[in-house]
Structure formats: structure tokens, C-alpha cells
Image (cartoon, rainbow, N blue to C red; front, side, top):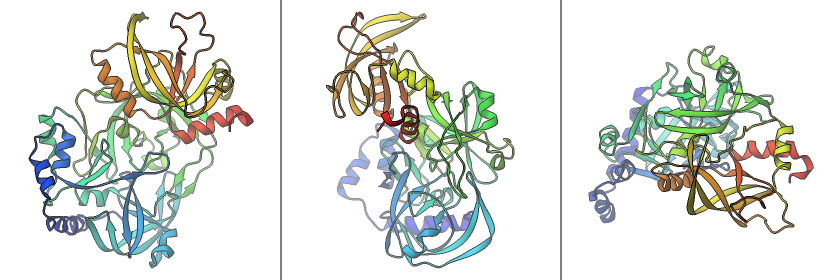
Length: 464
């Protein structure tokens, strides 16, 4: 069931008429009168909103609300044109449900569809839907239901991935971000919509034009198997199964996207599931894959769902790895075992700070700067130091970083936006001119669950 225009109007009228009853506080008025410094501050000053939490993987947005007076959690899922709820929530919210003759089709196959009669449906502090009929399926999600694109459009919802907030207008009119984007020199990327209601982002993957469904409810990006072969993405078998409408599939494959670019913004070397999407994509004619929220979180962009537009801050260009010897990930188990064996220190780390930059050097005609980072060890995988380094330890290391005019700002941005990494440190540093500090020769950033499974499979009992 895709919400009709009248249904979406009902969402907006109910939600926003209530907002109009609440006058702005003195602090809010003062904040609004200040000159906005960016598109993000303009959005905060000219909208209401609610803070969003994330799922256990730190990827998916979760909104709090209630159904029939019982607290509920909702996944914000722009990959679904309509809102859906889990069949298992019937007893929790004391609701009625009836089975339909139709089947729901999703990435994991087909599943039965039910209709659920929601009572006193509320999202956050302002959005009150009331009683509503919605589809119910087996979701396999970490929430009671998902809020689809239709409802988010109806409230003129805007997701700010810099502040982790769902914003919506106070006066019932869509927030004019397009005009303000020009003022703040933010880059606008327009999205297209398929006849089935999916929003498509046009990008470039490994040098090939790609059309991807933009899906904030996807735990992992997915590339169609035929398109992956065309782009040279090598796929490896993995025990990972895909959860969604239709239950779970058999183990699928995973590959590494060397580079994905949207306008001036790009991500490098991040993982994506590889599987046949022909049953959903009309044999590859409608889209080439599903882009999860990696790009959105990494860039801190603004997603205006109703206007079908993304806004990127000016000056942001990439969050690719800054190590100079990039390795392939995923890789086959034997290669990963050898990589671990050849390094003295292997750990999951987060960047705690940049100490300083120093000498410049040229490698293959490209200039690099030697930068010293402070890293916090989140999880120790291997260390040849008799126990001196452990989880919670801070390690200083030297990294060669490509030289660029905005280096300081880029490093600050990179540290803030890049996910946790697995770092591999060079062995035998005694003869190196850099002295006592370890130098890491590769950095892998990827979803924690997939990374952990890959490491565990490669190391066996040696990996706890």
C-alpha cells in the first residue's frame, strides 16, 4: 500500500497544525534571528525536529514514538515507499490484523502481507497520526516498524546526517533548502523517482555510471551481481545472510567498491553485498544496486526527502583511506592470514587526534606529508609486544597523507566522519628513519559485523 496524496496531506495537516500551537521560546527566537552560518544551521533555525538514535551497528536511524499508548521504535526507511510494521508487534500493541491475498516482494524474496489497524499512532513529540491502516510483514528489523518514504514526504521530512535529526517545518510549508543551498554554496544532487516510488541516485562506481536506490533502511549497500562483474568488483563467499521482507536468504557474497563518487564527493574501498537483484530491478533496467547510508553518514549531508535532493557542504571531497599502500578488502582468507602474520600490530582503532605534520616526500610523482596520529585501540587482534598494548591503549603512529591545500581541515573532517578501522602496522621498524613510532601500511574501514566475521573465519580459534 503506497500512501495516496490525500493520505500524505493528512499526515502533514495533523502533525504541523499541532506544531503551530506551540510558540517559539525566547531562546528559539534568538537563535532564529542569528545569521545562519551554514545550510545545517539554517535548517535548525527554520524547522522543528527530533533527535534520532541509531541501531546497534551505528548505521540505521531509529525514531521513538508510541502506538495505542505503548512505547514504540520506528526505523526510518526511505528505501520503502510505504510504511510497514512487523507482524510480531500485534500482541505488544494489542492490535488487530488480517491476512491479504497479495505477497510482499523484497530483497530477501517474497512474504505474506497483512493489514494492521494502528491506534493512536505517534512519532516523536509532535507528529500525531491517529488511527491508521498499514501493511504488516515479517521485517527482521531492530524496530517495531519502519516509517517509509510516503509518510516522511507527507510531513516534509528532512534528515540531517550532521546532527542526526529528523526535521520538519513549523508552518506546514516545505523548507526552501534549494534557494539557501546556493547562498551557502552547498552542492545539490537531485534524485530521480521510479514508477514504484524508489528514489534513485546517479553515481559513478569504479568509473562506471550507476543508478542506485537510496535506502536509509539498508544495513549494507548491495550491488547487482551482473553490474559488479561489469565494474570489476571481485566477490567473495561469506556466511552473511540478508534479512528483510521475505525472511533470510542463503549465504551471499561480498565485494569491495574501489571508489563511489557522487558529484565532488566520494567514498573509497567500502564493502557491498553482491547478489542477483534482477527480480527487483527489472533485469537491471531500473537500477544497479542499493546504496545504504554509508555515503550519507560519511558526508554529513542533508537529505530533503520530499524534494528528492541531497545537499553536500562545499569543500568536502572525499573520505577515502589515507594510507599509501591500499589493500583489497574483502580478500580471500589465506591472503588475510598472511597479512596478519606479516604485521607486528593489528587492531581495530579510532583516531583520537592529529598530533602534527612534518616532512614531505614524493612517491610515484605524488606529494605526501608525514602526519602523526594518536589512535585509541578499540580491539586488539594481534600484538608482538608482550602485552604492553591492550584495548583502551593509545598509540602514536606515523601516516603518509596525500598533500592538499586544505590538509588540516581535511584531516579533521576525515577523523570525524570515517568509521572505525582495522589497522595493519609495518613490521621490523628498527632500520626506518621515522624512529620508534610504528607506521601503518593499510587501513580497512567497513561495517563492524562483516569485518568481524571475516577476521574470525580467517583466524579461527585465535580470534575471540
